[in-house]
Image 1: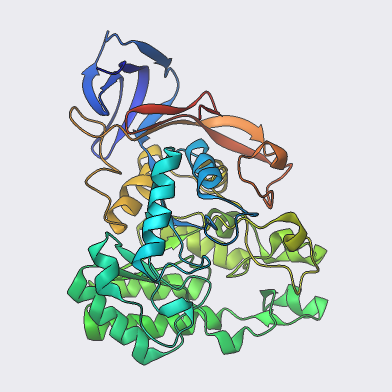
Image 2: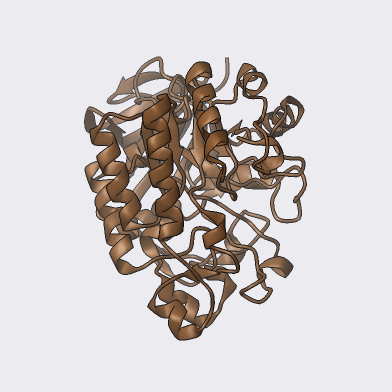
Length: 426
């Protein structure tokens, strides 16, 4: 029998209650909850919250194909340090995750790393090229629950409609990157006052809104399940709110950076702030926060997008979009938005686990018999982000040098302590 692990005097955050207790873990599961418990390994939880581990619906792990930026091992370590016990790996790898062999490789590398669960997503179209549908039936048979061409929006209405029909038939979810590409050619920032002042091509909010509008109508026609990736505009939030009132099977996510950073940061022409979709206006940020508060937006997802230094440090017009997110997500969201601890856990654990269909073993309440995938964190620690201290192979964080509030202290994956006092143990 493996050694038991005791979280002592921790504040448990469950959907139905928040209470102080000891939590004993044995053989990968919670074995007891109560006062005065004993264990072989004791972790002091005084003043800390313990919830089910965080689940990220939107992680770029880059392997296979772009290992100079990130590997599944290094990305898994970053995830664990951020309190994540599961991540959905985006399919824009090389080769793309449009086939069973690549999906199996990504999953096996995640198992080998052993720091968090890695759930490979599949592509919507072959090679993410938008020309023909990926083999959803084959992907579903090997456990893929979510398909996306993230980085590219599916431009063809007929292809997206066929994909949503398949989603309903196979009980999978299509996750859309909402961008009408002909409206964003050459753009590197939001199309607004800042963009006009600088004299560079702008990325209109309408490019996102038009695809959100189209795909809501496609869901209305087909009944297929749709997840909207990294929403960034006030108009998109309003459209999703109305669609949910209809009872349509639509979910949505927002990133920490779209909640905390605005388009004027691009006045510096610093590509560290270039992201897809772009940073938006204070009006959009407030609408995104309102969407979190009223349940229109279901989840916080990082869109963790590592890039090797020599690529990200190019001029703004050619540098790739994307920012790191896994290790700073809790702190950035907690700093940017006022949320109670149950709402935080819902947005970062319970809801994304449900959307990714991991709810049988992730995003579960802390209760006797449940799998021990747990994050232990606080909402009060103030710390300064240092890019060289991050576990990711890449260092493209927009938060370097910024003070943030809230921190992950310990992460338990499959009953094993993989992060202790903010340090990865493997």
